[in-house]
Amino acid sequence: MRVDRLWTNARLMTMAADRPGLGIVEAGAVAEVAGRIVFAGPMADLPADTSATDTVDLDGRWISPGLIDCHTHIVHGGNRAKEFEMRLAGASYEEIARAGGGIRSTVAATRAASEDELVASALPRLDALIAEGVTTIEVKSGYGLETEAETTMLFAARRLADERPVTVATTFLGAHAVPPEFEGDADGYIQSVAHEQLPAIAADNLADAVDGFCEGIAFTPDQIALVFDAAKEHGLPVKLHAEQLSNLGGAKLAARYQALSADHLEYLDEDGAVAMAQANMTAVLLPGAYYFLRETQAPPVDALRLAGVPIAVATDCNPGTSPLTSLLLTMNLCATLLRLTVDECLLGVTRNAARALGRLNEIGTLEPGKACDLAIWDIEEPAELVYRIGFNPLHSRVWRGK
Image (cartoon, rainbow, N blue to C red; front, side, top):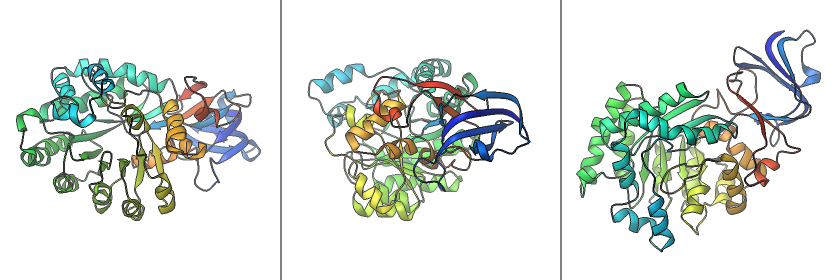
């Protein structure tokens, strides 16, 4: 077997579902041809006739799949540091939002920015994630809240993949907040999202999925359903910000539409968890927002486990409630604040994150046929990736074999 590159003398976290836990392989190897994995397993099982154009001896280092940040808002204008100060002084998230701050302040800054400016401001955030082994990132719109600005955001997000060696999945989040021009008319704005913004974005093939914010300060389940109906008409999968600040039944709604994921989930109930499991959905936990907002009700991890819902983990990188650009720190937050295990954290940024994006057939595990996206680590054991704070043990990163 002739391969382009062969990594030998490695320990593998394959994350393969047919192996227990992290799918660990001692004394392993990974082989790549044309950006695809053709072998990942024990070196003893490597075909005897294998020859490689390039062989890399890893001297016992660990290889995991490239990390996946499956929920971010990294493309936006401005920042909300002033609101951070307000929150420290006692203002709540809802109070800031109802006073015209929150998402709306970022909308104003984003609408005022050009596509080039949005790309330039997003790149440092993206670079921070890439430096920790991230090879795939999801980027949501939702700070334009009208067709032209939402389109500009998604064009900027797609351009990130031209600027850096990374895979970008784009999500249309028009149903994020009611913009000023629709003040007091959430129903009217939802009609705009479903029948103006979404068709235009679908026509330009700018979105891989459609998202919404189902919450008391955002949109009701019935309003979100109108957006999901439009997404279905355009053949786009859906996902949902659900049960972050209250339980409006968003997860159950998402389950009815066979959503890829429901995200946040602090106020999810057992019925919602069961509905998610029956719909084969993934739960995406976002501890950055939980920490930053000083929330006290954690997502019901035990209920998710009991129902058999796969758990993904993401930064939720955004300017207002989770200005977090470290997936390693995100895992530590999930372990310390939400009580996830080491295995759950690591699977949450690989296999289950791929599930949340509907891309498990392409990324998320070390298996033949998948993209050769790797993170190579200078660690003694996988737990170090969750245990350490402010320390990056990445040795090297491989995207599509390079």
